[in-house]
Length: 364
Image 1 (tube, one colour):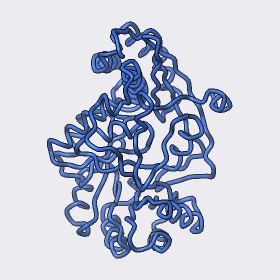
Image 2 (cartoon, one colour):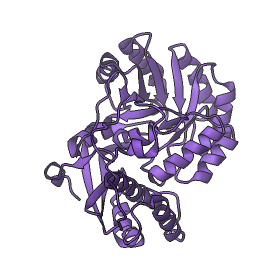
Image 3 (cartoon, helix red, strand yellow):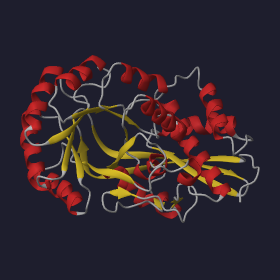
């Protein structure tokens, strides 16, 4: 069982993994994803955490955050988190600094659970035994055929809700959504994500059209910085269609402002951006205090344990790119069963191990 231990070493590495095809959404296009991995050692164990961030996050971890947490009590993760937040005061909390903290914080939670010989969800205290997921992809760069195959394949595999990207070519969006609905059938839930591509009135008009095809989730119909616009969509959009945003939140005040504005029906948060598992749990408490459901953005293997410990949690994003990378580079990455990810209680911590030989070819 666990015992007193200090954090002896923080190691960081970064990997750039090409996509399996060109990808784009309403406002951005990409051909690779960068993964920053942190390994925290202490008490004869090593914990693993990560963030989907630029390599500059790895530099910040190596040059600053590693020195901040080294020598601290491995059992006192919130204390290490607070020390990291204090250390980046003059660098700016949003962006790379919070993503760097995220990777270290996840590694420290994993280390603590391993020292105690417990799955992380057991350490945190579960309120459910599995986390419902939605399949996420349907990029605007996809042909109609690939869109149908991907979304229809998830539903056929037992995932009852799927999400597609829209907004790059608005005149094409209704036809693409119609093709998606045809591929997944009438019963599966269909989500759309504009990544802030639409102006307000266009978003309202599109929402009405999408509602006719049974779309029940409209993510970032306008920019997530446009809280008044999100509130407009929430108030005037079709009944039964949730407005969602929050994936670009890096600190608690961001989420508080979004909730105070009444901007969303479902708040999103990403533990690889919002200062780690510690930050994600804080957002969960904020949501619970406001009776607001929380949805986890991307990084499914990282989110499954804290998601199962939050009463306010609704579902997590089983994102194509991250699912692919996590299975390529981590032993222990999970597959959905009956539309949910279930933590592996036979493995301590997050249950992940870096496949070093497989990862080496992508090292930056």
